[in-house]
Image 1 (tube, helix red, strand yellow):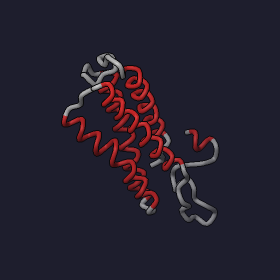
Image 2 (tube, helix red, strand yellow):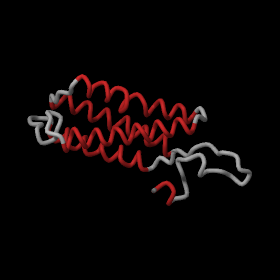
Image 3 (cartoon, rainbow, N blue to C red):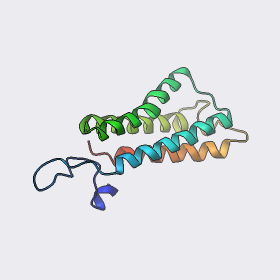
Length: 144
């Protein structure tokens, strides 16, 4: 993982000092959440602009897993509930990534990038790819 290569780790366990106490988490978890919020917002806007419909079940998943859980996880990490925070963050990022890949690139739905047409198609495609990459990196960079 990139953070470990440069000597940082998102895991508080990896940040143990000489005394064996757990050090505060590094900034990578917070950065992952901030970038994810921005990418999710951009992609949500592209859904509206390209008039791409989503189902009720998709909206529930997006509202809970994609939008609500990452900031909640960051708050838990900030409150030193590291294990729960990192577990939620990893689960959210990994679940969001699988959701993005399935509905935008694999399954033939109105949400698939090949089915979107009109004025917002380029923004929809770019934001879907960016969001999937952010979620992939976010899930790989979290040491739970």
